[in-house]
Amino acid sequence: MREYRYRLRFSIEPDFKSADGFKSRDALKKVFFEKLPLSADGRKVKFSFGPALAREHISECEYADVWLKERPKKEDFASFFASLPAGMSFIKAVSVPLFFPAIEAVDLIEEYALYPKTDISNLKPVFEKNIKISPFEITIEKNGNTRKEDLSLWLYKAVWQSGREISVFMKRIKGRTVRPELAVEALTQSKIDFLKVVKRNMFWSDSSGNLNEI
Image (cartoon, rainbow, N blue to C red; front, side):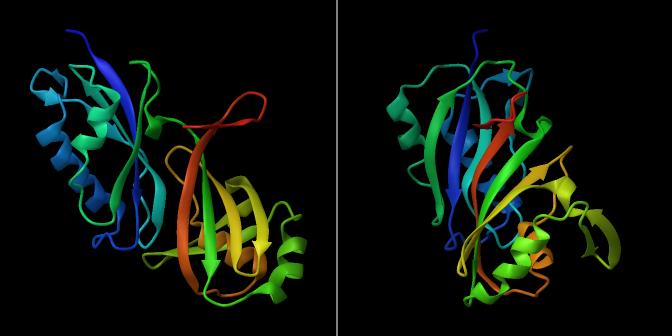
């Protein structure tokens, strides 16, 4: 049977009422089953998702790969996703080779924009000093457990845009990463309240070190 593979990109905004990656997947799965001509391997339909969105983050780059038994017209995809829940939007669909690596199987670099609630311009000198230090040990607490990590292993790049915006590029290696908020707080040596954290894009790095959009 002929198959066609597409990589779909969506956004998740603050008005999506269940803003975590697994709830958004449930919403998309429902639409996939109802609207898409999904290909099946036996009784199992074929689609996969990129890394789940962290709780309380919003995103401009949530990805899903779908395998279809028919090739839709380009304009069909907009109609397929015309009735997503409030706060979710379809961005684009791109045809990709059938045997491309799954997104979750690729080591990624994720771009974030972080917006502090107040101006933190006074922290720039500390940020600029610490960004040059490697190794740079940080402490991560999760579910009552504490571990040490070298931030320089997980941080690809951090750019101080202003006291109201910082760009951070975090590595995701074998499914693991470090939250960008923790990176910024470590670099500024301060506890920061963020108005929002936006996942802007996802990349893979080629042998020359160039970033390529997923």
